Image 1 (cartoon, one colour):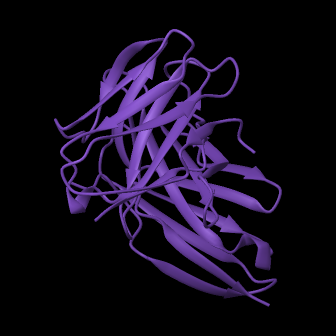
Image 2 (cartoon, chains in turn yellow, purple):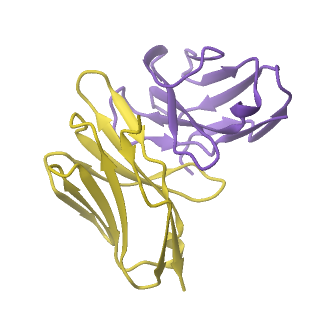
Length: 113
Length: 113
């Protein structure tokens, strides 16, 4: 049972345009969400996070939106740069009760120069 | 550099064998997490240790075991290896037991032939 889903395995975007990566989840107990970026031959690195009490968090070119009613979050990268080309994982956490930390399957973003 | 180290970087072994993967967390971090990433799969959570004690178990096979030592480094032991165990194994650390942001090591690539 995949509780966190990234339905697009890959995405190509032109440099300077917006990249939108999507993530859906099924468990309403998740109360914190994160995005990680992964380059080849490296471990994932933390990018941005959002608490379930918010619907938006911004950090420079990166913005995460959370729609709790739709159980959907998205990562917007504006403007996209070639160095953003990587695999992006969303992760969801339940911090109360049994601690769970669940990753999606990842979306490979390619930013074309 | 996340500050998390993993050894070895690569490991090639035969079916039926046993291997040990080692992880040193960031200085001061008490939690260690182990993940498995198979080809085209997301990160599958295996196990979480906090300050020497097992905190949570994920999809970890009975053939696999882990421990965290008093100096906080951790080892993941994989035994009776099968071809399907070939994967990237990541270790991550965080400061506390319920931290949101995790810092990942570069991974150990295990190939079972």
